[in-house]
Length: 76
Image (cartoon, rainbow, N blue to C red; front, side, top):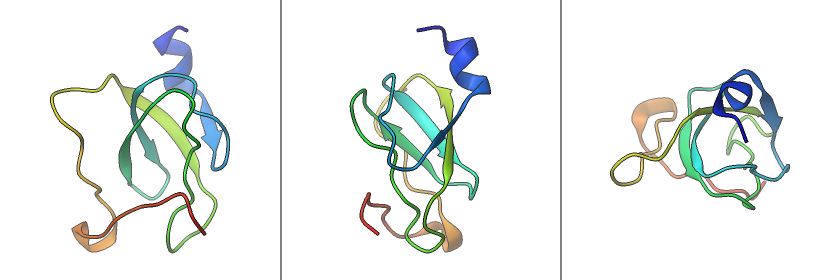
């Protein structure tokens, strides 16, 4: 799958992740997601849209949500 195409596409919460990488949502949250995972819902805002930010680097990115702390899960 071409990463240029992925960078322009928005994915909804609950849909399947097409490629391993780092994804960000409209609220500023960034997560490492793997092919086959489901795009999670934001813990306060609910459904969101996600975009591909790039390949996974060294280690896992920290959750950068409101206040800079917390944990994002796929549960609502």
